[in-house]
Length: 171
Image 1 (cartoon, one colour):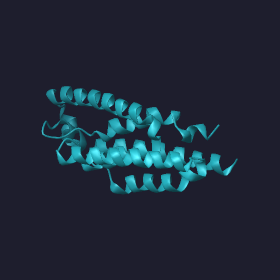
Image 2 (image 1 turned 30 degrees about the vertical axis):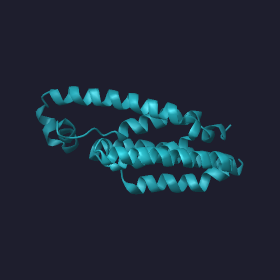
Image 3 (image 1 turned 90 degrees about the vertical axis):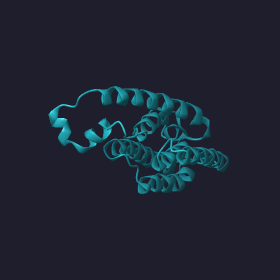
Image 4 (image 1 turned 180 degrees about the vertical axis):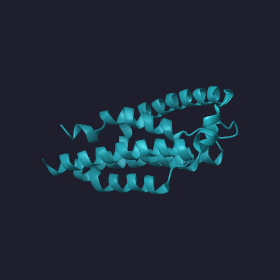
């Protein structure tokens, strides 16, 4: 196995595990940890050049991710999304590459819309007694609570990732 294939394999596994972890922890705690975002950033910086990404591809991904970070921080400042979501979407865009940003953001919007509609319906239901003892379920059920959008961001990332340079480097 070559260095580029090994790097792509390690990066792909790291990305999938981190994306799924982000979605699950956001669902359970309504938080996305900075350490997770920094982990993704560090693995990308270390392995993108080893996997065969060109300087131009990395530069374009960094530029697009920076633009997404600026837009997502504006959304955070307006109170529309959480700070963890703002950072997570940018680092995921970095990983997916500039050519996949549109499909990723569209997927995240569709998953997010579906998640929001499901939560609105869930919040209209009466919780069974056993659910009242589960903190993350009662937090999700609370109408004053937000939407764990990290779930949608992670789902879209997992959907788009197989089309990226990371996976192409494995073949």
